[in-house]
Each structure stands twice: as structure tokens, then as C-alpha cells.
Image 1 (tube, rainbow, N blue to C red):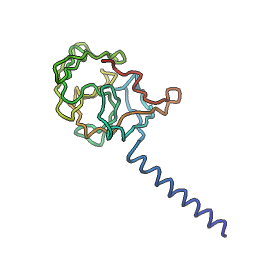
Image 2: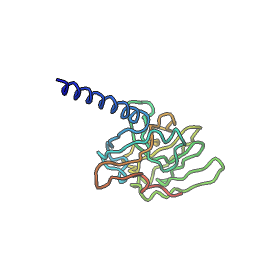
Image 3: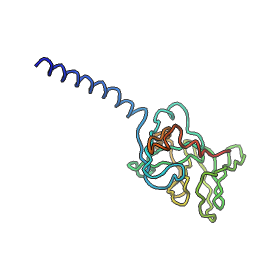
Image 4: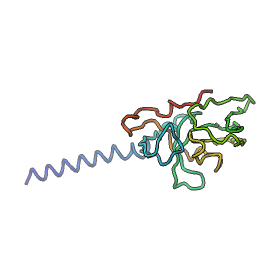
Amino acid sequence: MKFLGGAIKETLTFLFLAVIIVVPVRVFIAQPFVVEGESMYPTFDNADYLVVNELVYRLHTPERGDVIVFRLPGDPNKFLIKRVVGMPGETVRIDHGNVSIITPSGNTIKLDETYVVAEDATYTQDASLGTDQYFVMGDNRPRSSDSRSWGVLPKQNIIGRVDLRLFPIDNAGFEPGKSYQPQQ
């Protein structure tokens, strides 16, 4: 009988310690995310299993080219994955599908987005970003619902940066969005 009581006590102790360690990590540091849809192809495929770093943006701000997970403005129950294209204070100019950035100082940066699935060359738009606003786009432009359709992304909607792909195993690795990072 003592053996059974000891085994139960050890099991409960193990479960208690696991909860103490796992729950804070899951809530404050990292969370899993499964890609749904084609909006980030070729960087990510449907059903890719990712780990999102929730701590990184508590230490510094998002950077152009980061792949992020966020709550959809207007519908906080929906989570999306996109790439940061425009930063606070900038103007994003899309001219016949070509993206350039006008910095607050007036300089123009033409983004080299060789990783992008090209969109309709007739698409043109300008978007000026305020403080703590970002412009995000999917890598598969024709199949992406992003800032072009629903507007700018407030910083407070950002959950974190995609830092790890776990599945599929043959594409597993750290910083999976970096291989398609735009050059400035």
C-alpha cells in the first residue's frame, strides 16, 4: 500500500512541476501555431506547425521582413500570419504590384521581394502608417487577405514572431521566414 501511495505522490508532484514550468512558457514566452491556407506560400505551406516567440517584441519592436502572428483587427478571435512590410511613420507604395517604402525622412526604399508570388500587376495603393502601426502582407499576394484589404495592423494586435518550424520535419528549423527575408 505504501508503494501505491508513493507512486501517486510522485505522479502528482511530477504533474504539478510540469504545469508550473509549461504553463508560464506557453502563456508568456512561446505558443504553437498551425498555418491555415496558402497566403504565405512559398515560405510556409498549409498545415506547417510553427512556434511563435511571444517574448521578442517585449524587448524590441518588429522589423521589416519579420514573419509575425497577430490578431486580425476587427476580429480578435482570428489569428493570421503575415510578413511585416511597412513600419510606423512610413508610407507603403504599391505601384502595379511593386512595393516601395517612403521613410519619414523622404527616402524611397524599393523592396527586393524575389520570394513573393506575384500579384496582379494592375494593383496600386498607398498607405501612410501612424505611430505603432504596421503594414503586413502575405508572400502569396494573390491569395492573401492582408493590410491591402483590411487596413493597417496596430502593434497591440501582434502576438509574436515565428522563430521555429517543427513540421514538416524535412523543413524544420529556426527562423524559417529569414530564408525569404526582403533585401532593402
